[in-house]
Image (cartoon, rainbow, N blue to C red):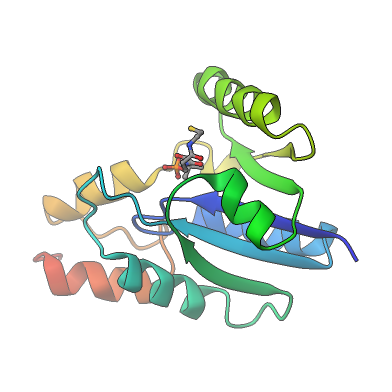
Length: 160
Ligand code: PNS
């Protein structure tokens, strides 16, 4: 059985992330979305909120589960007995950062590989940071995020 982890901060999950999740679920028998509980950053949404929103967003995809993790990604992969990581590449600006992480991970964990999916063109501009920035200033981010995320953003900000 082929299994993969799609890791990230998902603060919050966007339609771009969801696109990568759906396409990964078509490729692999099982996909675990790994939500990083990064204690060094102050996210907009708690890890529980991020996991809950993802669970709602992936509810119709039977071979996807959502889990949170602390610490190193390679340890999370090993704990789940998985040796494939999936990351999305939007543009050349992502490439250097992603290459560095993938190569570092491969250096310390040669048994774990990273595969990259190119983001669908309609989501090439999209990021969680852009979503948060617009929402903070009251812009409706309908079309950027799943409905459940839009509702949560409306609870935090006054959005048209
Ligand atoms: O959505 P993001 O914030 O771009 O995801 C980055 C993530 C979570 C994949 C990366 O920061 C990560 O793997 N963090 C866990 C800690 C770790 O393994 N660090 C070593 C490689 S940077």
